[in-house]
Length: 458
Image (cartoon, rainbow, N blue to C red; front, side, top):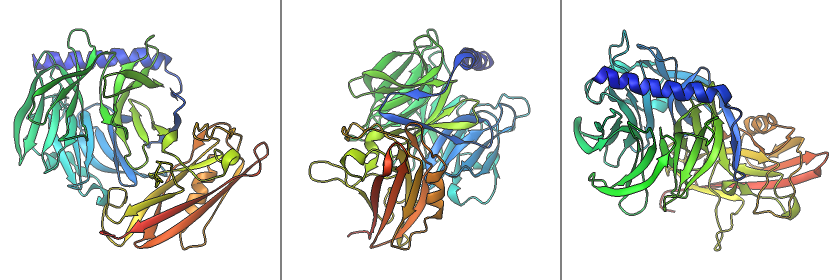
């Protein structure tokens, strides 16, 4: 029975891939986002997880020990950190425990020696080279036969979705190495997310074994049902929360089934398609500090990104304000909520990308050009040809100058990659960004971004 269920799952996925890849085009989104890509060193598979300034992504072809997890920096450099996987399910970075959690559900693959469980790689950002998955299991192989989504909880417990189908799907809670059933009676269990309001509710994706329609159901942390948030989805694979608390869901398809999509579900259960053009949208994560959404398109050699325009930091003047805006951090805000041209962070806080209280704050800094920003209605986006980055302080700027210049001249809204910028604690650094364009006018926009690193308790 288990083999038949596995084949059914693979067959459903294969059908979706054949249909979508045949017609999928470039990713497009609603106007509230700027779409971009990040290159990968190989074929993406499974999931993606943001960690500090970098991210981890599954790569490789399905097979016994043929898949791996790769750490990728923002400039595209990559290094394998885990090898010997068969069918990667989900990835999640547990910041509190400084560990990378991941699942593998392919123990039946010919030649596989491990699988059907959840793993943890400690201090993954410090990994000097690849480690075999076999020695990293949190519970024995076979414990979670169809291990898919994974979610860390406060206190060290881990939730794992078991996408068994046929009413046998479940969410398993692992505490101290002991697995227990938290939620049962599901079908193909998909993404798991945790809301941040109150004590936190679990949002669990599920795909019906008969209709293959997806849903997102609500549960409390004891596993008690709180009802269905949304049903009738065209699919569900992974989920994550955006900055506003909406749940994002991959694995669905456009109405004409021409491509896979990304949908957003608000607290009232309203479903909205926000991006399409994927072959098969699978892995998903959101960079909390910047709001950037990262989507893994199964089989593609890049990640797709969506940066919300309303999370950008404008710093120019009126009619010129939209030609360059900064991204990578959350802007300081005035009493009325208006964004200021500065980012403040406390050493060791979640906004500090190095994750440690070590006497400095690491920011990620990038820029977007020719932005259609509803917050600057008097500014008309125009082509930007050049950018100049300067500072009167000690911030190294060569890497930032290079990153911003790579995407110019702009022919529409476009964002650069972001680069790490370190600011000593109890210091403030100011970066000036000036852009020019033949059609936008000389000195089309000039922004100043103030980066402030606070001491804990200040």
